[in-house]
Image 1 (cartoon, helix red, strand yellow):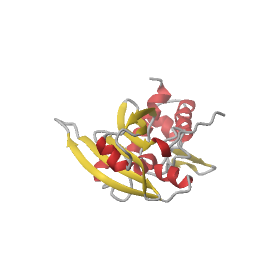
Image 2 (cartoon, one colour):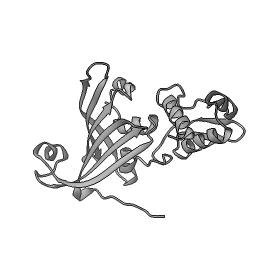
Image 3 (cartoon, helix red, strand yellow):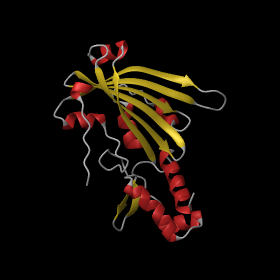
Image 4 (cartoon, helix red, strand yellow):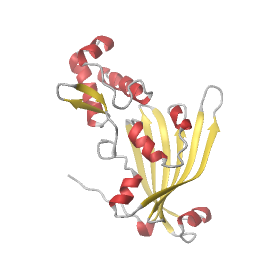
Length: 221
């Protein structure tokens, strides 16, 4: 790993662990060069990457600070399902269906497993099965996720350096069909998404949608 990547990873760790919380001022470049024993250009390159990812914002003559992330500012482009539904002109609502902490072994904290339903105008739009790694994101265990889903908390509060997204088709099993108000074996569009901080696996999500009411649009620039 190159020196600027090492510095960037350490800055990400501080943001993720709350050492540099949202809105906090980032130390000046000259302070960071002394702390990391690196050139100013190396530190500036590490900072610039975080700025591009929407994790840090620069203010003219006021230094830099930790930014609040949104789906629009995130370079990694993880959408907020609430905004996606509202941008389609529908009213958004949410239900937490299941929440379970899976205990780890030894020094491992375990996993938080969530099943959530997102609705558009009161009709099922997305069934979310999500697993959160509590070894990397222990703060998730303190989040009830009753009023708002994990998608909101993760996108706005937790930095990710890598996202893997897959899109596939599937037939609804009996349980999924009942929750999504479709017939068993009806077609579903399924998005699976894994997020990482460095080499650490943050979350795994399986997002199932009735195929008749969901589409994926990409724009090439």
